[in-house]
Length: 232
Image (tube, rainbow, N blue to C red; front, side, top):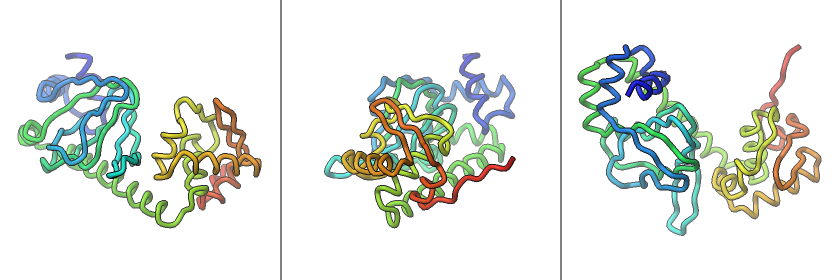
């Protein structure tokens, strides 16, 4: 319980709470573990409540009727997800899949409402509004990508994002083709073609195990992004 309270205290929304109050909050929910590949909850099912991810990685996905998967967000520790159902008690807006073995804390809609009544602290509400605003902006950006950017531009943008604008090498085991395709709403074959094209243009170096960004400025142009300039 002490360790869990300490982990929950790392979440921005709960940082100002005392240890005693954190223990009360922790006992209102439950600790849940999920093996890699497990569906944590499914889209349009009854509210699964809010989760806080302490360890692992979670993909928030939309699934088409034909079985195509689109990853709308990748969740890594320590952050909450599915918070909207804790607020309104509605259906889950997406499917959550454990991309790695996960340790989470979960609280349902009714228990969350009880906590808010017990701790009527505006910081919790304001913090959730910031999270929801961030997700809204992300979805607007995703809509723009799908509407205007061709696949090669979306691929270039994704490479810049997961490499921290070329600052780190991309481990392909951590970012397999299938996952990358799902992140930009395309198929693996289209990603492979885009990688070959970017490699031929000497913008990236691509092997079976890693992808290295060779020219982030020109890659940003391909991605229709503003270049990241640094000052001495």
